[in-house]
Image (cartoon, rainbow, N blue to C red):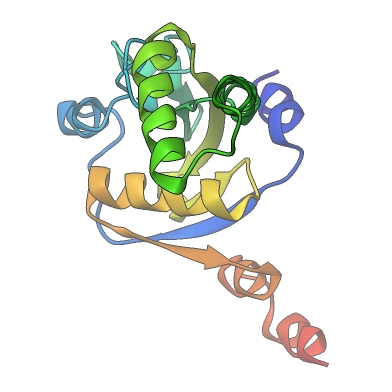
Length: 194
């Protein structure tokens, strides 16, 4: 059921090898690493911004990280929440058109910038951010992590967050690297080379 939920969300995966020593996933230091980089809300922010951080699969607020909510046999279900708050371009266009009509001329670059700043201050506190949840399945024993996303931007953000949290590197794994580390026979690897 869990894997079905993960695949349904993104439809694609990116595989990584975890290079370096990480805390045991059932240890207090593991939960502390997630808590230190937990998601923080930007609902009331008055400027355009993005917030990215860890949340528990059972708690999308980022307030708790219980081992039992993330444990899947010998794997760990990680979840990242990405909130983006942005002033809709349509609103800027509407207000710009209205300002130009009332003045009877096109706005200068300085006036357009001032209008945008005024709109951000007035409207952004009322705009809810878009919310995106990104799942990953981590097999610490195999040092393998599957990220259920393929977008370049999401992959880069996830890698940065993982490195900040655990102090280790993620190395993207293609089909060849996965086969080499899977322990298949040497003659099968040679056949794959051909």
